[in-house]
Length: 185
Image (cartoon, one colour):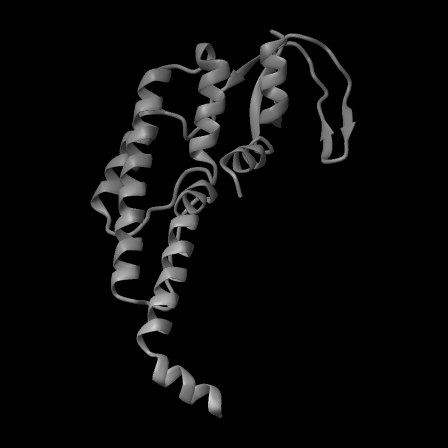
């Protein structure tokens, strides 16, 4: 899966907007949205929120987890723990990128939030690479990686599968006699 595909999936997450227009409920395949009344919050998918924001039809409200204090706590927790800690959203990186790129004027302390998310991402990716390195060097057969997001899995997935394929080829070349014996049965 490409990062753009993961971002596409993240755009289905909901976010609260404050519209500045009136519109009755709209009926989409994915569900009903609205009604839209000026000044009254309504939850919509991120793709719609960004579209309306670009047309200056709404103000986007940052998700509850997109708060500097909460993100600092998450970052510190991630650094302290050896395992991966649960993230506030399964698409925290993609949502932060989308919302800050299109609605940073609606999100207080946007630059600090961007930095905290980047620091958390860097910590998690370093931890993930270390885990993958240990996995490969110890010649493990399976691994349990809880609390990873789809983008994090996507980032390491190709490297890990390629590494495992190479290990399989090396093992097959180092043990030709054993392999021939097992094929005789």
